[in-house]
Image (cartoon, rainbow over all chains, first blue to last red; front, top):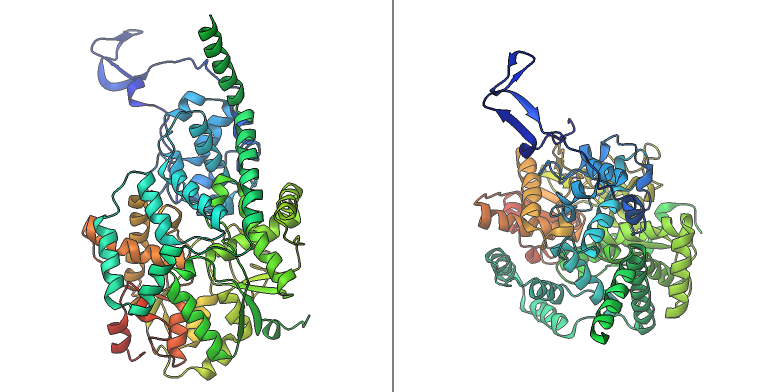
Length: 259
Length: 312
């Protein structure tokens, strides 16, 4: 399968002229297309370093742009704009504003690991996609994606109790993303499931949902994990220079109120 | 430690994982029944915890490594066993990944040791426990010949597409034993499930999407993409002539079931292929009752088909 690459010529940069003569040749109209020239000056020289400081992004510098990741990508086959090779290129070049054009779809990586399987340079593109999504959220370019909300609800429950109870997980996820639980397809799924289930199993599942299973002797692990996650989250903010920003804003605010 | 895998796998630690206590209950039930019918001992890991699935790593990868390492530590230290069997692709993948990271990444090893110390668990040393999938377990402990001998009635020409999903084979580096010679599992074209089901009489169809992704990680958070991916798999299986898709992962299994329904509801596309755990199919082939293997717990109702084919 060929690599589905996107055109770097964007519709808004195309120029046509009703009347234009170049070196005595009439080039008016649509038969020939000109491209608006532009100069990129807003490089973010720290972009690669920032992505590399987040989990999953550590090996982005190894990429030599072969495009195997995009070629193998599950999501790219559905949406050609989903292009890991291109995003890695943009990050390495520091082209932040270009990257931000795709900010609403980067989180859609399904973690199938086909990219990581084929990558000849061990870039771990799947991890890079996660680092990019984190970066977009931490920097405030995007809201928390539904996938990240799900990951957080899930991880909170594991850290809290040691185990997952799916009914509770789904209810919490739908509540936190403001969706109704009564989606037609979920209702239909439940209806088909309930058609054949014996009463004993239903009771057991209902009880599990109410009690929510937990791992015995888990409290030590819970405290250790909570502490670690908080420590890491602070470290990520520091790496992206966000703690300083917050501190400056706080000082400005107190300075303004003091004056 | 006995050298022979078939002997080593006759009694293993069993890590069912969270999904097998919920939506994947039929997989749990059929796996245990299969073990019993074949005289294999499954000893559940005491006080096991979630491996972190596909989610914890996105909050922090080392949280997942710790969670999975704790299960390995329980197997080694609390049970004194050296093989743990996980039927769920997610659990299997994460335990293998933890094993790899602890052996090769000093950063992960340091964090996991620190968390284990704070939590008060004994530390896990890589190499103490071998993690195997239910497919590897059955393939080595029983094997095709033995299975052929024991099969009663069998699956008699039932047309099956074998679906392995992502986490059983990718990424390659966490599965050093795969792609290592003729008898080993292949990461590009896995065949252990094909082998076992063929031995039980099934007719495996040529199926190109064995290791395609079902979108399981985003099954609820990006449902349109998941429905699209699942529909591809279902339609490819039907086009290949399959009546049944055999699964070996609870997330894949419930993803296929859920989005088969969702495709009907949202896109108006109906597919008739049935989705059944491979352990259910093997159990039926060995003469276990449909109820014993939890056939009634599947959303995708295959009872009529299997009765018509003389399997049940």
